[in-house]
Image 1 (spheres, rainbow, N blue to C red):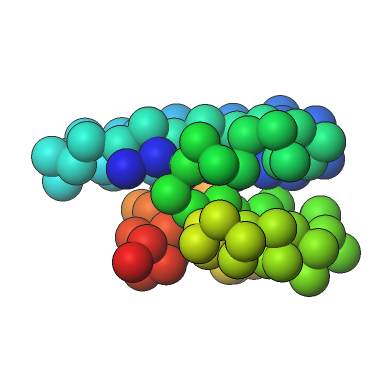
Image 2: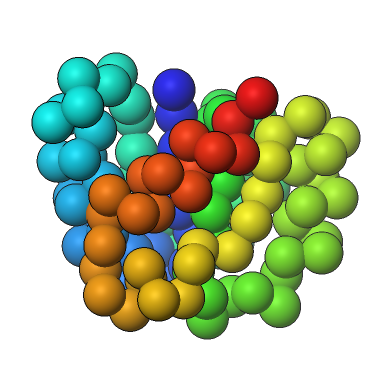
Length: 100
């Protein structure tokens, strides 16, 4: 499975990505998890199974959901509590729950 996290510059989600990778490894899940800036979304969306937006770019949700729907790729905003707590396991659970 491939999970994309996107935010303003792709930097603020990097800690969450590392925690998600650790949680996936502990669960023996084969996952590719990356963070990229929001301006790369359109170019990258089709390469992923699910996309999670950083809370600071939630204003892009409607636009990105529409693009994701065209490719059958779920797009949601990262749970703000999990984001703030840098809870990679919870964010991973959120991503897994969105994948069909």
